[in-house]
Image (tube, rainbow, N blue to C red; front, side):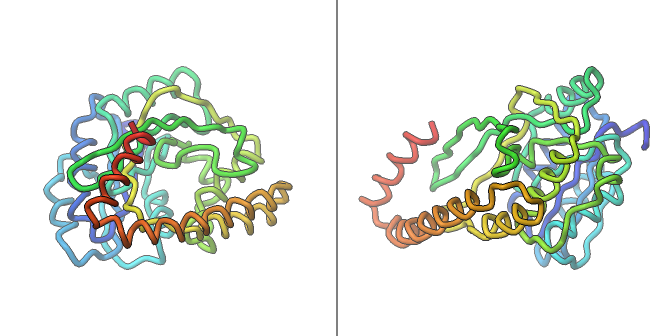
Length: 268
């Protein structure tokens, strides 16, 4: 561990020129600088790496090369990390200015294996930004993802003990890792604070594959909740069909107005 860096913040990127500036700027604005920023780029074809280079005062390490998916890139970042804790900040998300300071103060007081906190979800539709605060539920971990990956900070030594993310899983390797940590009695501690701004995709930008992978994970780890995960998978599939219909018609002015009205009730 490098005493200079308490936290290693890993950002995985691919063709993220439109958003990564916001992410890195949020790191530049941190009130506590006891962190290193590591960018793992998958060989972007746009200006992502040029933007990363413009944040040389923030980014400690960066590589740009093809990878085998997001979790392969995350594992590369873990291998480079020198901090006591490791965190992942998506290339379209952002921390609040006091996120690092709050996490370090909490960690120094309690020294847990994993710190997990609240998350602000953000959804852009046209010129309007919708937000809502989400709180985790660790007790749900045997059934489904009980923490928010972008709002977690895990000890580097825990990754060394459990290993990195399992590349068999394309979308749910984080759930697999956190569930294993939970089963192995890792010390999870809740920091009741909003730690990250998480960008949610558009109406057609989501997949049910994570639930399908979740079924496999449940069966392999013998949690007894595989059938519940199957129910979530089927529910997601029905929602997916509904969202595809919405995506097709939301461009119509009257449908868009109705959709915006519904979103306002749900998100604000």
